[in-house]
Length: 157
Image (cartoon, rainbow, N blue to C red; front, side):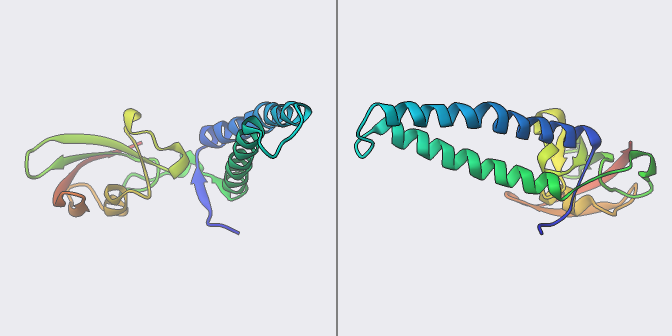
């Protein structure tokens, strides 16, 4: 059993839709491609067969990973989220103490992370550094370019 992943209802729905697409659309398409390659005769030197078998292996691996993520997913009760300190699903506004730039991130589970939408994974150094901290706290976070200091200027839903 893997680790529990806390996720929003919408995030879980998207993962289930992706799994359904892979099992009901991609899997039969690959099986059909393998069948067609076999019909062409000698599969020992058949590049189409090899490519289809490789694609099948990769797809099955993706299906297995996604299935286990869904199995270990727990829906977060968004009504119970507290904003007295930083936690999952909070929208956190931080100020970089070096250049005064402000950034706003929502902390989400790994499958829901999307930097373009300002959603960062709980697994990232910034999210890990912010977890449990309170409004006005200054946190020092190790980023690839070194240590940076951020002040928490807002915690919201």
